Length: 55
View (cartoon, rainbow, N blue to C red):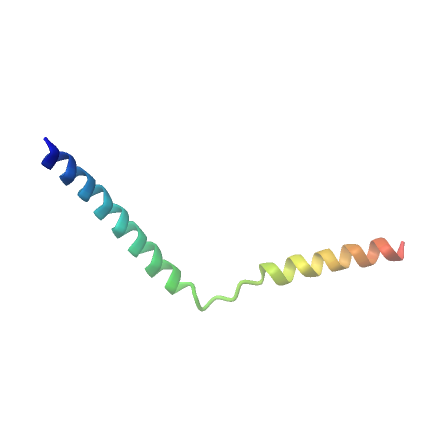
């Protein structure tokens, strides 16, 4: 009984570990891409603040 539960838990953690490994590999593939989101958001905020202060 306890051995079956232990086997189930080990299987579940093994599947989760494989998913994490797959995600790490996928993230490494896209690591070369430059994320422009912070630059874009800060530029938009600056633009809206500038236009608000001007008008």
